Every structure is written in structure tokens, then in C-alpha cells.
Amino acid sequence: MAHCDEGYLCQVCGEEVKRIDQSLLYLRYVLGWISVEQLTKQPEAHLQCSPAIAQFIVDPEFKCPIDLESSLNKHELDAGFRTERENLITAGYQRLKYLQKHRRSLTITQYPIERNQ
Image (cartoon, rainbow, N blue to C red):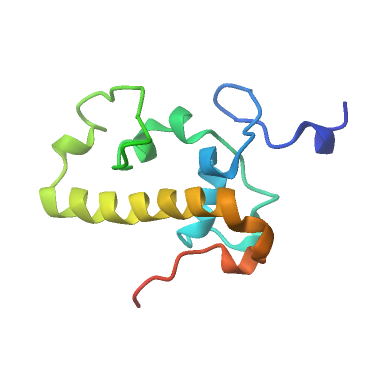
């Protein structure tokens, strides 16, 4: 099967990332951490395969399945930084959930969340 026929494969588990709301790559894009041009050049992973990021998603529909060692665990971080990170990454995840339902009516340049400058 040609690579383009396989879709985006998770660099951690090797399985296909089937939905945008499971995608670390698109989370990074909607947060403004990568540009649209980098979407085809950056590696992909499931959010659940990326606990260092996933642990900051505070949403009843999402569970971070892996406990991190203490040096990487969000509970070891400064409370203000942790809250800021949770707010940002949760907003990105909620944007992905919205896009899963509505992306056909949006252009890719409309995917990122609006951030206060």
C-alpha cells in the first residue's frame, strides 16, 4: 500500500490516527505550535500515545491512560504553569472535537484557535 493510502501513522504505536480529535499533529497545529506547511512534514501520534501532552487535557471525554514518572508528571509543576498549560491544551483539544464535526465547512487556515496576543 502506498504511504499516501495509509493515512497518518502514529510514530509511537504504529496504528493509523483515524480522527482529527485523536491527533497530536493537529493539536499542535490548532495551538499554533506548527505552521500549516509543516502538517505534511511533521510526525503524527495519537494524543493518548503522548502522555506528556495528553495529561494536560481536562475534559470528561478524554482520559490520559499512562501515568508519568514524577519528573514529567504535571502535578510536579508549578500550579500556575500547570493551570495555564491545562487551559491551553484543553482548548486545543476542544477545538479538535469541534473540527471533527464541522471541518468540512472550514478551510484549514480556519482550524487554529484564536489566541489573545
